[in-house]
Length: 338
Image (cartoon, rainbow, N blue to C red; front, side):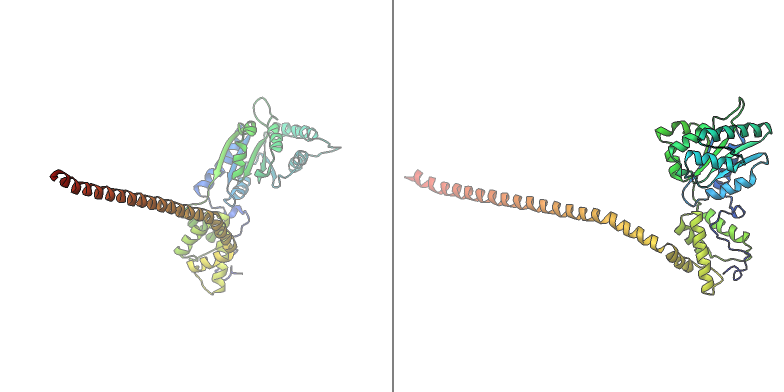
């Protein structure tokens, strides 16, 4: 809708993982280098983790475009499968025919082992890439670990790349996943972009889309980072809505005001939920502090009243004693005179 308005050849902020738009920040370059090295070396598992929307899948697509020609790849994008279904999918991805009745994982593993030995003789490598790997169960991960036992005397026949959210890293660090963790030869955790890279990321995508003039003001770019915390997917969503807002208002420069308005439309409900959750978390604490303060004040008042009463009683006793002493002193001289 707004592409012609801004003189662009296509929308620059699509959330699809297009490697053509991959902004190679230092973090993304390191992530890609880890994947390429892990596949080319004699490793077992290669692990890439990161929070939602940080660009793991985009890096994976870029990896596929840069793999050596002698590498066969099986890509699994839906890992919510049983052990048998997973093995059947791997064979299907690699073009391994499953003739006859396949009734157990062993049948698939035998066919897979035959294929791996054949391509190894052809001087090729085989890599298995599993996206959204945080959805894998421990039993499936154990099955994948057993696949890394397919080897010759010189090298492993299958490299397995796991891409998943942060909980995958935590899951693999569990005591019952020790055997899997010990076979990970390369691991990298992808962080969100910092402020400078966030602005460079936006400008990069605009240039790739054909932008020839400034579209976002500096204040708008800064606000985008503050609102998205450098997460590429959120940056794309917010920038796309901001450009649409500028188009609707007949503005050729996206201002911070337009970004703020777009953020309310895109993240409004989410921010309200967070605000409500914050209130739910804090109001019991505030009430508790108030009650404790009142209790402390009451206790202090009670003791202060008690001290005043004691002080009053002591003062009365002293006054009586002083009066008695004065009376005694007046009586004693008369008796002496007589």
